[in-house]
Image (cartoon, rainbow, N blue to C red; front, side, top):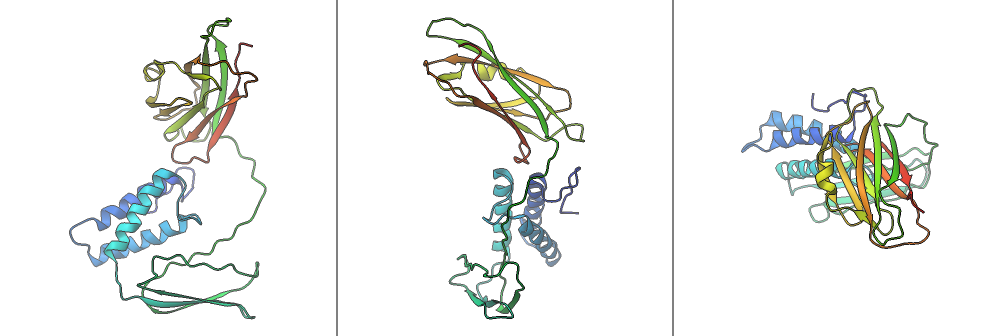
Length: 276
């Protein structure tokens, strides 16, 4: 089965898109592609196209890069410059729009706003070739109340509360996974710095000693921690922050935890200095 199902029943998740794209690349990357392999590949392409958002991407950067690479490879394998098609969209009333697609404009996006929503439209394609047609409907709905994927807390504990120019504080982050599986996918913890603060020089070294940490990315104003996975038991991570400049009326900074393959599954908390 090429279109993989996640353990939580979601067919189009970011991990599924990425894995399915790798299957597509494997099918069409040999020195020769047989007709049976092309037939299977076309089914995968059909599924991947249904997962695309209105802007041509997918759920995350990772799955978008792999999926676009696979779709581009498929396009190269099946390329034919003989195509010449006419696509007609119309209603039973007066609306009609025609799109002409040939070898000169095949890479050009053509679009038209449908005047009546809801409405009944018919679609007719004549000619020879292959054309990709997408209908996008945007609307607002109230979000469903779902259990958060992660439990998250963040607090600062003072290391030095003095009037000196150098001040150190320890940020304690506690996080755990709440869904039905035993462990999560790879997890990102993104820590924004308070104005005037930065991570201490040994932050990456210290974090890499902590459980499940596989990588740490340090920037001037943020720290990103990559966890291999998370379970239901709470894990604590500590970062030492140093004050470089005194800034008045400090605003809260964010700590965000999210699933690497499903960025929409996330939790956010804020923190403030413990010293006045």
